[in-house]
Image (tube, rainbow, N blue to C red):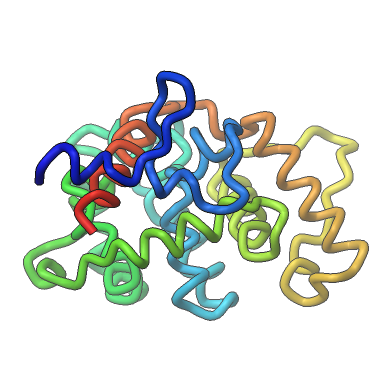
Length: 236
């Protein structure tokens, strides 16, 4: 791919070139976009392709399965990038359980496009030859990035609340005594209610603070995600 083809749609801000995928509406230079979005992109895909109940149950059950296969000190696996930090032995332990998991086929078929787009996809070790060769769609990637760009919008709120619940149910997040835990179900049962607003605010505040996410933090996938996304944009 000629270099000028990749850079032709970039916008220059001072000495920095901003690629098209980062020029989508509502993009701002926040740590959530730069650091958290790539780690939660798989959740965005689940919620885009599946109904809410299935997306919630599938994601939480997957994280619990992975966490249960590893020692207590393993990193929080709601973050996609943390799979990169696992040893081969740890991945083998997860894979052994994953092959027997009832949700295996649904998860692989739903996330398959990401595994095709990204050569270093953190969940690539779960995909065998049966699941390779699917459709790799840049348009789908744009859709999933867009879901998370406005973190106050309903689609992104569902992702953030689910991420927080997955952290708690997999033993990676503990709330101090006296902390009033909101009704997270309200996000799905009555999204316009005050209870839902409290749950959304609670989730955003905890993710802002990096609660439950700093342990085993991996920068490799975050950097790779944006770098490869920029290149794929030029190849579209």
